[in-house]
Amino acid sequence: MTVRVEHIVKRFGSSSEVAAVADVSFAAEPKAITTLLGPSGSGKSTLLRLIAGLETPDAGRVFIDGQDVTTLSPQHRNVGFVFQSYALFRHMSVAENIAFGMKIRRLPKSQVAERVAELLGLVQLPDYGARFPSQLSGGQRQRVALARALAIEPKLLLLDEPFGALDTQVRLELREWLHSLHERTGITTLLVTHDQEEALELSQHVVLLNHGRVAQAGSPHELYDHPADEFVASFLGGANVLKSRVSDGEAKVGSQSVPAPSGARDGTPVQAFVRPHNIRVRLPNGDNPIDLGKIERLTRVGGYVKVYVSLPTGESVTVLMSKVEVDKLQVEPGDAVAVDVVDAKVFVQSYSI
Amino acid sequence: MSFALRTRHSVLPGFGLALGFTVLYLSLIVLIPLSAAFIKTASMSWEAFWSTVTAPRVLASFQLSFGAALIAALINAFFGLIVAWVLVRYRFSGKKLIDAMVDLPFALPTAVAGIALTTVYAEHGVIGEQLAKIGVKVAFTPLGVTMALTFIGIPFVVRTVQPVLEEIDPDVEEAAAVLGATRLQTFRRVIFPAILPATLTGFALAFARALGEYGSVVFISGNMPMRTEITPLLIVTKLEQYDYAGATAIAAVMLSASFGMLLLVNLLERWTRRAEA
Image (cartoon, rainbow over all chains, first blue to last red; front, side):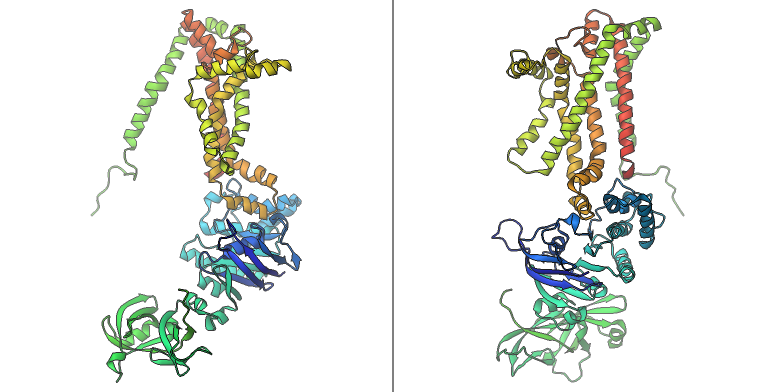
């Protein structure tokens, strides 16, 4: 039950155009949820559609369960696919929607009815079989779409931004629900999303894509704690970017010195990525006044406070602190504060941007 | 303290005014002239009415008019679907031209269409000559009548189906494909049910239009009593003979029959739309 793609290339339009997917290889772990994460235009949806057979690659191979399915039509790949737009058949009832794939496979009626009832229970819509999609909420529709995809007992479940069209509340509920559903079914799942929180929460394995290439693949915590490059560092966790220069094998980031990337000579400009929770703000305590920052704005988000601080270098950073900490400091916008950097990742500055 | 509103305000204002206008408009243009036909008919005795509308010549015209209109509407439903499909699904040069051509039967004076069709399909016409060789006569036969009625009904199905087809989410077809459905199965089970209500609407419109058509038919039909005489022509003939009651009697029967059929098609259409409630 594994899925593997090797050196997949897909171009849209003329061959001179930039490839939507450029030489991507990865393998999804069996029975796990693997996330294809990336900003819009990173090729993540195209990659999913290539695996489903809805697009044909220009080069490369797709393997499902060890079998080369590169030239196999979507009808014969036996995968479940869930679209962001739900893509339900609106003239069919919920039960008919779920039964569709089984009817195509000419399963006996009694078996179809039994499985439909079972799936309606699984997606927690046991009494909705006779309704039509237009009578359901977005979250319910997406659960029906999921039941329909699962009805054909696919080897692989492909979810293309399944919660993208739902409001936050429903999205969080469905995320939880999908997690428990996966625990029960154990089906190998590929999830496409641009929502890093969704990726970090739901999946055991993340493939982070950028411009049609794999930026980094690994466990969520690997990507978060050991970003391979500046894209990964800035995409995950909304890091602050600070400029610095290497001196004596170290780069000074705020109040702290961080080891510079190996091979970086003195004077090399570097970028430091500092996560909002890796910066601490405190009251000045004998600090040199020219090292102090100024609080620009405080935004309270539930139990957390986002503190926007402008640094003496002219750069500004976002700091995430607990409400308790901020209340203790009793700071107001305009106050001078000391800014301590707890942890930072330093990369040699790229000139591409 | 509360202020109770005497009337409930809708976000869309002017309901009363708009409805009043609708009723007035329909009354002036549709209801009053049509009921005049029924009132005039009522001046006849029942026996006179019955003998008028069951006269062999009248029955023959009913058969031709309803039969040809039905066949023409069916042909238009089938080919209209294909034209709409081609116009929505494919990109090709000249598409805009074909799209514009669909509306021509609306714009053309029907008499012009009738004369043109007759010229081409008459025994010595460009196409008629070829057809005559294999023994097919179009002009001055029921076939010619059907052809003229098909011509004037072309736009209806195309124009009702086209927007619905355009609205079908490609995701839905892909979902069907991933679930194992072939192209044909996807069309039969997913696309066709989605466009069926619009097709029925187009069919009903084409049928209604064909039933009342006069201008294009009178040239190609030859107007032979009992053979190629359509009901609208018979009505005109009666009027020319100052038989107003007879003309309205036939019109009343035709009106009732077409109203009944349109109602039936509408009910059917509504039934196919039940899922969109």
